[in-house]
Structures are given as C-alpha cells and as structure tokens.
Image: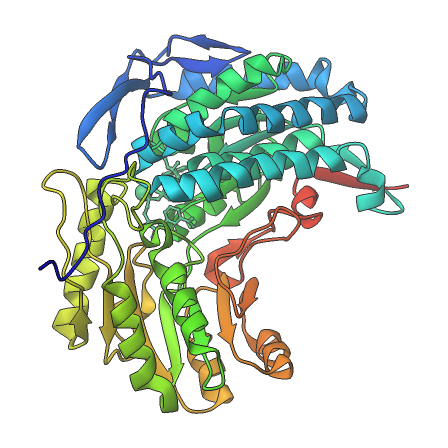
Length: 482
Ligand code: NAI
Ligand code: MG
C-alpha cells in the first residue's frame, strides 16, 4: 500500500512567451544593434539551456542611451502636463496586468523562480507600483507641501537578478512619475523580462527616449555610473558594488540611492503563535530560493521554545517541493546562476567547517540545472561566517536568546540593517523592539510582505534612500522653496 502521495507534475505552458533569437538595445524608442558588436547567451538556470542572445553594451552604447534620455527630457517629457505623464503610467500598469501570465512564465524561465511566486508576487506587485506612482504624478505638490518639486533629469538605474521585473518597476515608476527620463540596465543573468517590457512601452506609446533599456554586465553598469550626462544613479545589488559606485560618484554632485545586502534577524518570542511563526520563518528564508536582500536569514529563537520551534521547522521543511520553476506545485526553484550556486555552496561548507550543525531534508533534485536543498544550521555562533555574511540562498542560521535585550543586541550585531521580523503576542513588545532594531523595515507577525505604499530601504551597509511610498519620490525630485 502507498504510504506517501506524490504530486503529479503540473507544468505551466511556456507557449505564451515568444523569445527572440537575439535582442538589440532599446534606445530612443526602438531596438538598435549594439555599437560594441558583442553579444552573450542568456540561459534558463533550471535546464542550463540557452534562451537568447543579448547585447553587451559598451561605453559608446551607454553614451547613445544617455543622449536619447537627455533628448527626451529636454524635449517634451519634462514639460508634459503631470496628468498626461500619469496616463502613460496607468497604461503601463494595465498592460502589465493584461500580459501578466506571459511575464510570469518568462520571469521563471530566465530567473529560476517558482511560477507560483512570479505569478502571485512579482508581476502583480510590479503592476501595483506603476498604478501607485501613476497616482502621484499630478499630486507632487501634495507629496512635498510648501516645496516646489521638479524633475532631476536623466536617471541611470542598475538592478539585480532576484526580482527582475519588480526591481525595474521600483526604479522606473517613481522616476517617470516625477518627470525624469531613464536608462536602465537589468542584471546580466536576467535581461529577458526587461526586454519584453520594451514591448509594453511600445504598446503604451511612451514617447521615444523616455525609457531606454540596455543590457550587459558590470562593465556596462560602471560606464553608466561614470557617464557625465547622468544626474542620478539608483542601484540595487551587492554592498561591494554599492561602495564602488559611491566612490566613483563622490564629489560629482550626482544623486545616489543604494539598496544593498542584508542579514535580517527574524525574532521569535515564546508567546508567539508558533505554527504561524514557522510559516513566517519558511517564507522568510526559502521564498525565491533565499535570493532576497531582506530575507530572514538569521533566526533568533527564545530559548524556552527552541526545541519545539526547530522540530516544527524541520517537519515543515520536509514538505517543501524543490524543482521545476514552471511547475505550479514548486515551492523552491532553481538557483539563479552557477556563480551564485558556488557562493552558496562555499558559505555552507564554511558553516560545516566552523562547527555548526547542518540539516537538509531528503530531496530529489533534477539532474540538470542549478539547485540547492533548503538548509538550516543550528549550533551557530555569532562569529561564524554563516551568521555574519549574506548567503543569498536557501540557508538559515539559528541562534537563541533569553531576554529582549539579548535579542536586540544579537539582531543588531551585523554590518547590515535592511529588515527584521518580530513574532510575539504583545503589541507593546513589538513597538519596543521596532524602536531599537536598526533596520529599515520591520515586520511584526508576518514576513516578506510588500506594498507599493510602504517605503523600503536600509541602515548601515544595507544602503541609503527609500523606495516605495511617498518617500520613494524624494530620490527623483529636486525641491525648491515654494
Ligand atoms: P552585483 O552587485 O555585482 O550585481 C547587481 C547589478 O550591478 C547587476 O546589474 C550588475 O551587472 C551590476 N554591476 C556589477 N558590477 C558593477 C559595477 N562595478 N558598476 C555598476 N554596476 C555593476 O551582484 P552579483 O554579483 O550579481 O551578486 C553578488 C552578491 O550580491 C549576491 O550573492 C548577494 O549577496 C548580493 N546581491 C544583493 C542584492 C540585493 O537585492 N540587495 C541583489 C543581487 C545581489
Ligand atoms: Mg557582481
């Protein structure tokens, strides 16, 4: 007799996306051949199969894109009535909703994330950001009372591979709402949803040059940062590159916002609803394979409930389904790239070597593609690399505490400060903890919850500037006294 039930495969059809064999650069409202003459192959990390050839933009290509953005800014865009700007943003939002399934499949194909997440989180949130900022476009004087907001100019925007379309929306929506023009570069491993977005811009009839999308690796990003025609740089990615960008921009007068890494504490008090907290822990670290800057990667459990929490956590981990990102039953998809897989594997090895205890549920991984089994480390000392460094993978480190003071001290004992979670029944304790945690976003009795109206950003080495909400507009306006 069967003792366990297996899920039958439930793959989402990929027929809805038509990926071109090769792409140029989207500059001045159309695709152009890269002046560099160089291309590289972008792949499906779950199958290690090529998907398309995309351009590696060089200095001359960046220059061309910045000039197109400047032309559009000096031309009609910055002078357009704000309510007209809003119409374009509303259109983009609606088209994203109409084409949501196409974008979800493409996002999962090129990035490895489960279709359940791209379908239910990434794409709806991307559309929501455009809707939200569309609403602000003609109300900027209410966002900044007694000030005279005006656009800054050309924004160079560099985004990572963990939420490709969503990060594009976080960057482009507030920039356009405030009347700026944009040159955006997606990450080298996940260019395809940004390239499909160019077709949305065509459908929305956005004036040429307002948004330019160029592809390439870090060298292209560095050229964008260094270009003299850029007025503002917005970057999401590693702390290392963020620091390099800040060095390049020092003294130039260009505006900068940085959204960098994190090593968030997810803090569970002994009065927390434990089953809900375990769901929050799972969502906090295994959502999007842990490729999340605000991931709850350090679990702090109050000592008196340690055994019960770990037992429930391990039991829940055994039910996670790892595999084909396009399968609707998949919880944990593919690791985004070979490079990231190697980084995760080496940090996990360091945890074993330093003496932490590792647990990985039994798990059958596909033969091809980049995979990593959901992992939890117990017996972790604060000094271990797995407790200090951002792993950016499905790996959780567990620490314990006895008092709220000790929890605060341990939670803040990191160079980062992006997010944190607090699980407790006491409202007063939530407020007291939130005041003392040095983190930009603090979730209470939930985790990884996003809303376009809520600002997001870091303390310390997690960066500066806020994205989302009214705060997110600030980075894209110059404020004169009224
Ligand atoms: P990265 O910081 O190198 O890449 C992010 C973006 O910056 C990409 O578009 C890349 O092409 C661009 N870039 C790279 N070098 C640049 C430079 N010198 N100037 C301008 N742009 C540049 O991140 P990477 O190498 O993909 O991942 C390494 C680690 O960084 C991850 O393991 C993770 O810990 C962290 N990371 C954090 C992210 C976050 O959301 N905060 C996102 C991606 C990575
Ligand atoms: Mg890098």
